[in-house]
Amino acid sequence: MGQQGDFLQVLRERGYAVDDLRATIHGNGLSGHSAKADLTIGTTVFAMKYREGVLVAGDRRATAGNVVMYDRTDKVLELDRFSVLAIAGVPATAFEMARILEHSFKYYRRSQLQDLSFDGKLRALSTLLKNNAPAALAGTGTVAPIFAGYDQLEGCGKIFFYDILGAEFEAVEYAVSGSGSPTIRGILFYMNRWGSGPVAGLDEEEALTFVLRLMTSAAEFDSATGGVDAHAQLYPIVKRISAEGVRTIPAERLKTLFSEKVLNHV
Amino acid sequence: MYEEPYRWIEAVANRRQYLDDQFIQGNPLVGVSFAQGILLLTFNRGTEKIYEIYDRIALGGMGHPADLEKLRYTLLDMAHVEGFQRSPADVTASRLMKNGLAPVIKQAFEEIFKAPYIAKILLAEVGITQDRDRLFTINYDGMFEEQREFGLLAASSSIRGQLAEEWKTHGSLSSLQSALEVSLRLWGLASLLQSSTLSTDKEDKDEEGTTPSSITSVSTIPDVEAIASRIRDTLSKETLECVMLDRESGKMETYRALSQAELQPLIPSVFQPAT
Image 1 (cartoon, rainbow over the protein chains, first blue to last red):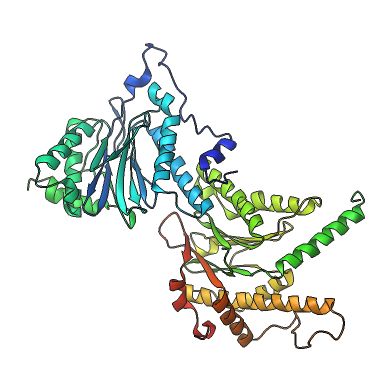
Image 2 (cartoon, rainbow over the protein chains, first blue to last red):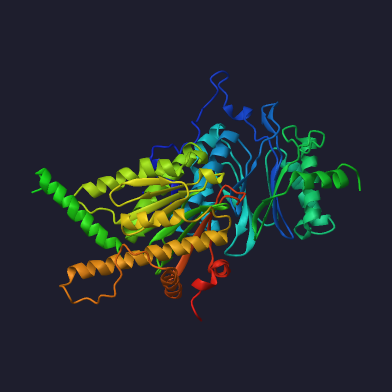
């Protein structure tokens, strides 16, 4: 029984393979090479602190090699009212992880009659990544997510990022992941060091403008990042985390900001 | 000694007697469907009796807390595994009741060498539209009922019958305030009927002439003032527990426990205890 509120345990008892999300493949059978080379983490997701909380953003593109599979993917997934998982990596495994986490948190809250603590949520994600390590190494289940949420105990927003083996790092100001992330990382570093002020001091409008500019920069240099496609009305998914919980920034608002402050020079 | 059918039937009858006695002092629980969702209402003396099961489903219980807890876990496990492996839309109160709860409770009741569950449960599921609301109630023997607008847990089926009649006198409920008022009234009525059963039982058991004659019999419907007075009395002694399954929450999750501050202004003044 799940008397400790452990949903993974309940799934295990029902014979669901939670500890081995993707079968490991040691080569593609043709060239003898590892499958890893073909499965890149093609995406851009990032989270950054700003004056009123945390913003988490993700582009919409899903790729396989150099083929664009889909342009409307949602990579910033709400796990519960106070936490978000931004995924980079093999979508099948990443979505599965998000689904498991979402249900684990719900199950814990409903069975134990209290919310799982912020640290408890982090542990849950680490456990999934740890169990997924063989698939991550084989390349068939590589996931490097960003976890962002509001810690109600300490009363502040927090950002954590992970490598593909599940090592956990807390970000002081921002975290980036995916193939487009080196560009963004460089810009964020530059802005924090020599910009007009630290990124964490931006108000919501400035921060959202900055997010759109970062995404556009990432897409400029990374073919696997969708960026902003104003023509097709495709904007990144941006979520705001604060004491009130997680809220999605409406595309309308991004559209206005994009046409006023990103598309044209100001 | 139970090999003979007669003995088995007798044992089951004893069990009914025993269980009926257990519930007589329990708090009734009312569930009503209204425009904005479903309201579940009861009073408690410390232990909560209403719980969230899934996105659109809540449980209300009457009986032994340990038994309720065990059955609650059965439902939680079933609902979450189903919601995870299939989809949240596949988790329905109907399936939870028919496949999950009813067989378990019935089996425990009929296995006369083991202890039965001392539990009556109401499962409420809020629909996207009001005509899809469902309220299921199950008795300690595994018998369940499905209703669209109203569900009640009370000590005996005769009280449930009387309350169902009473419910018919109300029109459709358009607001939380009216849902709360009607639920409180129904709860008060159920509670009075239950305590009069208790007194009648005592009367039956006592020798003739030793009980006061002022006790009302079960068949009498208490008047409006008696109900109001019972509610006032209980409000001042116990905690009012109200949960709403909010059809209009705009989120996947609909369950919301109503706080005392939120409830206070909605309680009609005739029910407010004198301060």
